[in-house]
Image (cartoon, rainbow, N blue to C red; front, top):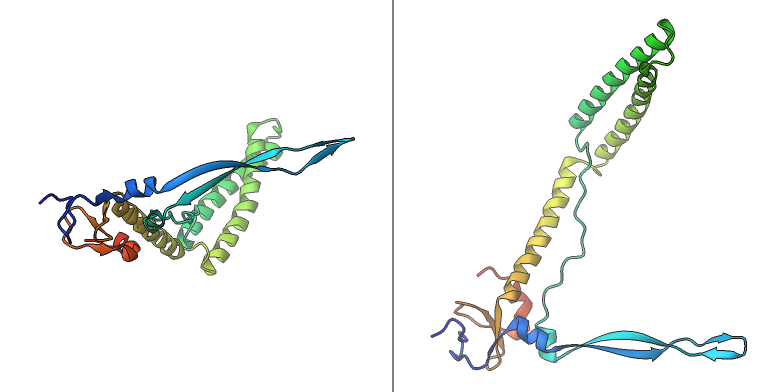
Length: 207
């Protein structure tokens, strides 16, 4: 017996691929509807607006593919833990102090205001001011659990699970077959037929 034979009735003549049946039972049509009238001076203009419609047979509606989850991948911040925040802030702070001291020395003691160190000093002061403020905000977010590494990992795991479930269901849909005689679906090599009213349970199976 062929692997395409229905596992319930053992016949092949009423077996079709689910994706093919779905395409055959889906029809896309376009039509025009009157648009709002526009009056210019004493003349009225009438137009049309093109619209699209999709119609499906009852069987095609039952065999619709799984919908891709409408979710966004979580974003990971540059600093997601307190230790990483402390390290980054400390390094930036030390660099800022070094640049600021160098800028002050060249501008005041050496009195070379045209030196590149003058700009280094300005950058250093900015680092000293901006980095701690940014770091403090990051620590507040971490304390609230908004940007912590654990929170990110939980969201990422949830996201990966939803995507994995969708990809598995889509793969099952792509390889599924329908028997019109028994009104059920099955996968190649399967020994059991799933009733059509349990189609979405069939897509989530791992057999």
